[in-house]
Length: 421
Picture 1 (cartoon, rainbow, N blue to C red):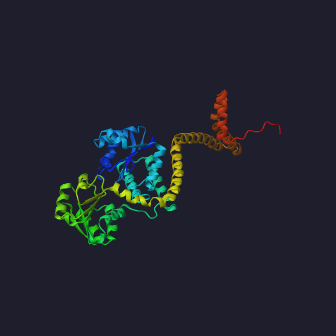
Picture 2: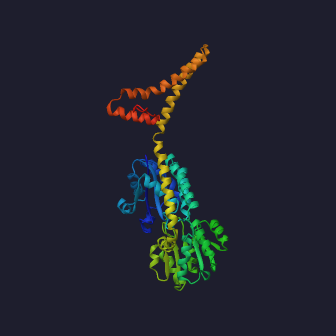
Picture 3: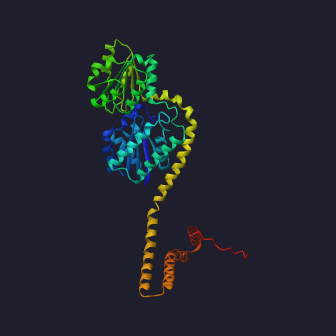
C-alpha cells in the first residue's frame, strides 16, 4: 500500500475550476466515508482551502481517487483532468511537507495553511479514515513545518492576503480611513482582513454574518456593528469596500443586487474583494461599471513582490524537507519487515522457553547446576543456528555463495585469512 496525492491548486487551475471541486466543511466527513467505503482506498484525508483541493490516500489503486473526485462533484473526468496532478509516494510526501511549510502557497511562507492541514487531519481522524500510514505522515508533516519555521526565515516579512486586500483598496481610494468597510462572513480570513483594515481606521466597520452572535463578537473587537445576511440588499449601497469570505455553496452577492446598490450610490466606485471558494460574488459583477472586483488570483499578483527576499530561506527549507522525506520513507519501508521481525523474535522466544523449561526440570531433579547451565547455553545456541546452518549446507553453487555472504553480514562474521601469514 502506497501513499498517493491527487490535487488541484492555484498553480494548475484558475479559480473557476478550483471552486467546482471544493468541499464544504460540513460535508467532509460524509465525503471521506464515501471515498473509503466505495473505493479501494484504505486511508484518506481531504484538504480543501481557497487555493487547493487535495486528496491524501493510502491505496494500491490511485486512479480510483481521481474517478471518485469527478463523480462526487458530478463532473466529467475530462472537465478536471487537465488541471489535476497525481503524485506517487516519495513525491507525495515531499509535497505534503512543502505545503505545510508554506512553500507551495500563493503567499510564500504563510502560516495559515498549517492550521488548515491540521484541521484536515483532525476531520479525517474523526471520520475514522486516518490510519497508521497517513497518521504518521501528518505527525511528521507538522514536525517538519515547525522545524522549517524555527530554523529558517521563510516567514519573515510575510505579505498576507489580508494586507494585499488593503493594498488593492488603496489603488482605488486614496485613503481607507475615509471609507466604510463591510465584511461578509466571520471566519479566520475575515478576522485577519478586519484586523488589517482596522489598522487604517476606516470611517465605519460592519460585519454581516449568517450567525448574528458570531458576527457581533467580531464587530465588537474592532468597534464596528453587526448585521444579518438578509439585510444586505437594503444596506449594501452604504459601503465603499466589501470583503467577503464565507463557506456558502452559492454566491452571496448577485449581479442584480450590486446593480441596485450602485444606482443608490449614484455610481460612486466600490471595491469588492472575494476571498471565497466557491465564490461569494458572481463573476458577472466584474463587468459592471464602477465596481472593482478582485479575487484570490488577483491578490496573488500583489504578494509576489515579496518572493525574492525569501529565496535564500527557501533553499534552506527545501534541504530540511528532502532530509525528512528520506527519514519518513525509511520508516515506511521498515514497516514491511515488521511481521518478519516479530515472527523471528517469536520463534527465538519459543526455543528459549523450551530450553529453559528443560533446565528448570533438571535443576529440580538435583543435577549439577554448572552442567545444567552448559547444556542450556548449548541447547539455545544449537537451535538458533540450526536454520541458517541447514540452509547453507543444502544450498549449491551461486545460491550457496550468496547465502554465505548474507549470513556473514547478518552475524558480522570475519573469515580468517588463508594467506599463511
